[in-house]
Image (cartoon, rainbow, N blue to C red):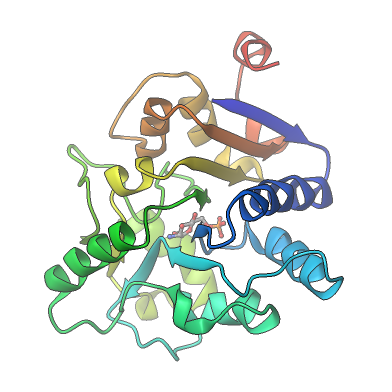
Length: 250
Ligand code: GLP
């Protein structure tokens, strides 16, 4: 696990965009695993800037998103499909047919989840998976629990997550209670992982991840099982880590 602590959002956006650009340069038809949430927005803006400057070409890139609320229509302005279109896909030359987000209206969610796993396999796997992190340590919508699901599945959202995500909806009652999400095993099967965390609300979860211990009460801690994880943080997100832990990553 590699830890990069940046002084500004701009540096985080640049560093993250550099990692994605590197993957795209090494593989024309790279498969980007993408995430929603407010954290990756500056990095997506930087990717758009580089596309507009002629520095990046997404025409042969494929993408798979981590998760989607369930049930929620793709054209609902709170859906993750809508988010991705507005934050990134509408502003770059990616072929929308090559972008994939779990289907928030799937009639048969378990069949849709199995099909999503199959799709990832058919694409040849994920070259780089971008992740945010919930204040409770969730990644995608893999919530803290006694047991965790390995593959893409339908899940219930915790009260913590419903409350945290209510800021994007008209009211807490409007937040869907379920989601379709890649599982921990799906995420760990990506060749590289980039987790971005900013703000003090993420400090406890980041301290748990960096402790190196595994616990299902902080699903992101399972990233310690992967050999190519970069954690890109601001100072606030590492504010609960002790000196010894930080020194180990220096
Ligand atoms: C949501 C998403 C996660 C995301 C998390 C953090 O619950 N399912 O993928 O990482 O929120 O969001 P934010 O970046 O807005 O703090």
